Structure formats: structure tokens, C-alpha cells
Image 1: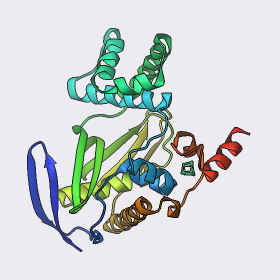
Image 2 (image 1 turned 90 degrees about the horizontal axis):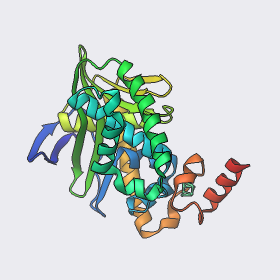
Image 3 (image 1 turned 90 degrees about the vertical axis):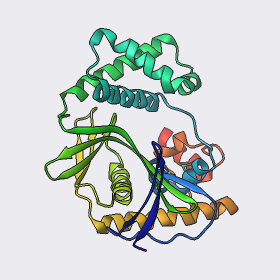
Image 4 (image 1 turned 120 degrees about the vertical axis):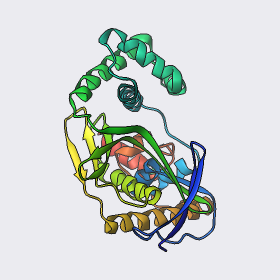
Length: 276
Ligand code: SF4
């Protein structure tokens, strides 16, 4: 279905457009679903955990994810308002935590000394971040939201959008290893194509922790393949809303942060191996 999609209201805009860069599969009507890049990559690792998230059930927060989220807030602040002086850094971090991260801070029960440790870690990441080439940044934390059927919305937040000589470059910063960045980037490039009517020229993941970089030149074929996997996700999770046991569960390191890790056979087995 090359097509006509609705664009979800964003900053007061509601537009529709005709778009035919690649075909997104037709989706049957069903349970409403919001599919983020995170839900998509979780689904590819373990459909069972994705079902939990789609039902609003999440596992425990981790110190690493808190630190990563704070680092992203700091990077966005740098790109929006300019460099943060060393003397102001701890206060800037506390302001960012106060703006959006207090619930996570509460759930981690970090003592003041542990929080200072997190801020020091984020400071080290910020130093490396500033060494990266940042010219040409057009926008940060860019929200994308496209309704691909009346009850399915795809969503994503791009860390930074750059203007490159070859076109738009989407960048996702990592504060750890690159891991499964490829699937996340494929989702972002497909979503950008849906919202803007043309694919980005480059999508890139860059780790400020390790210095690793991965980049991809999106193609219509890769967007089609990603669209098919998203359609499969929608069908699987909707089936799971009726019969959760029918959704495959795949054990691995992600079980540590899964809300079902204590009751899931595959998860218990995986965690036993990981802790041996
Ligand atoms: S515990 Fe592991 S295998 Fe089970 S649903 Fe969660 S992530 Fe999947």
C-alpha cells in the first residue's frame, strides 16, 4: 500500500500527505498500539518482553539506564543552549533530573554519594561528547509520530538531526556499547521516511563511551523489510493480548530487566546461566 498517511499532531500540526517512497504493509483493525523504536528492538530480542511493555508492565530501572538518560539530557542541553561550564555541570545535571527524571531517581533509591558518582560518570561522557563533530546539527530530540493505520502509531525520538552535503543524517548517541543499534536505526530511517516522504541519507549510531560508530545508508528495500517486521510485531502482540502464552519468549541478557523474569521459564533458565 503506497499511500496516504495521517501525521499525528505535533506542535499543533495535523497534516496528511501522499507518499510513495516505499510500501508499508496494510494493517487490519484491532487493539490500539503505539510502537516505539524501543518496543520494536525489544520485540526482536524477545516478543514476550515486548508484550509486557505493550501492556504497560516494565522491569526494574537500572543505574546504567538512569545514567544514560541523564547523559542524553546533558547532550541535548549542550546542543540547545551551548556548552555547560565545568563549575555548573553538577547543578545542570540536578536541573535535568528535576525536569523529567525524579520518578526514576526515586525508584533506584540512590544515596547522595551514589548520585554524585553518576554525575561524575556523565561528566566523563560529556567530555567525550564535546570532542565529537557537532557542526550542522539542525535539531535535537526530534519527535516523530506517524499513524500507519487508524489504531497503530509509530513513534521515535531522534537524538540529533544533521544537515550533511548528501542530505539528512540522523544520529543516535549511545552511552554504552553499540549493541543492537542496527535495528533501532532501521526503525528510525523507516519512520523518518514515513513522516517526511523521503529517507534520510545516513543513519548513524555513535558510542561516546567506546568511540565505536556504525552508519547505514537507508534504502527503500530496508524500509520495506522493517515495515514487514513492524507489521509482524503488531499481529503478534495483538495475538498476545488474547493469549499471552502464544507469544514466543527468548531468554538472554535482557531478562535481567524483564518484569516477567521470576515467572518465565526461559528467563529463569537464562538468568541461571548468566549468573553461573
Ligand atoms: S524473562 Fe526473558 S525470556 Fe522471559 S519474557 Fe522476559 S525477556 Fe523474554
